[in-house]
Length: 203
Length: 240
Image 1 (spheres, rainbow over the protein chains, first blue to last red):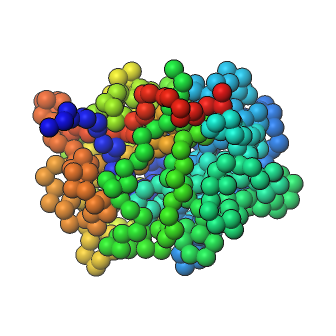
Image 2 (tube, one colour):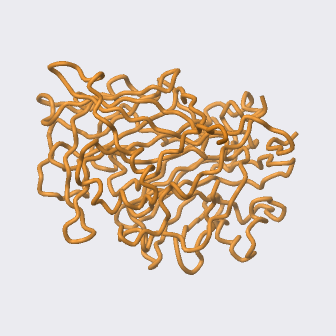
């Protein structure tokens, strides 16, 4: 018999459920408990870069909005730097830039929105530059394990992005592009299933 | 050391997206395959948290919403470590928990279960792990409650747990169950997990060594996040 590897196994995911707001955004659940809720400010007021708002809905396989969804986003600053010690340039990250946000919906319409700055391009694997993008993580009742995807911008040059180019069916890359509604406002609808199903990532 | 990517997530021990016995998953599950992505800077980094983000009382669910006294219910401590698959503690990572009260009712404007809200119980807490990845919080044991799935489904008592780790690729939400609960085996949400060993890993044992005499019982719950490679040869992740 060979030696035992003795790795531990990642804990299994379970759905965040309909009451995820109690734990992650109690104000939305209807009560006030913490000094501050986390994930409300992605980029502080002094962070350089183009101010943008991103809005959208998450749609289920019947086309109905997922009104109890919760999203988290993670991005680089305008110079493409992540505020994290493993980014080689993290010491130069813009002061006040958190890079992470927690996004909740309007319970009636399912519409969500967040304010941030447009990220810069980020160096990817093997010196291939990744076009500006925001990483998404999506949880809700009925979603057994959080769904990962990325949002790119339709008004950027995405032609050589190494991740978009991995999508075999070229027309499906469109599902990862945010539409420019007007200057500073982008729309990014996420389709969990069916026509125009968003490309989700196993990261 | 150069940053390295994370071990591939073992999808065979994780629940699939489509689990028809948990009905809500049917319309909320992608039908097309996930696109497998090797880790880049966007996945191996993630948000960081510090003690300025939270308050010391945040991990005491018996006191963090108390108005006129302590909440009703069985007083418990839940404690354990956040570890990676290599067995290393994950320090200074944010753990957030939420749960129903002792009667199985959530403090949420969308919960209409007939059991009463407890005026002294909010039902959420949060804490950072220490330098060894250890965490603990105090609460009351949540009650079971019915939910609309099959006509007569009841959730086993559980506490929802959200953990960050150091990277966006490690982000995890799960649920902790209590040793000995007969509802666990009957639960369609528990049974979204195909591997019985992975289910066992969600069941916290009673830990009498951590119980406080004449005060509260304790349960131990370790949380394992994805580990990462320790060797890098040709598989260059960085841009150099």
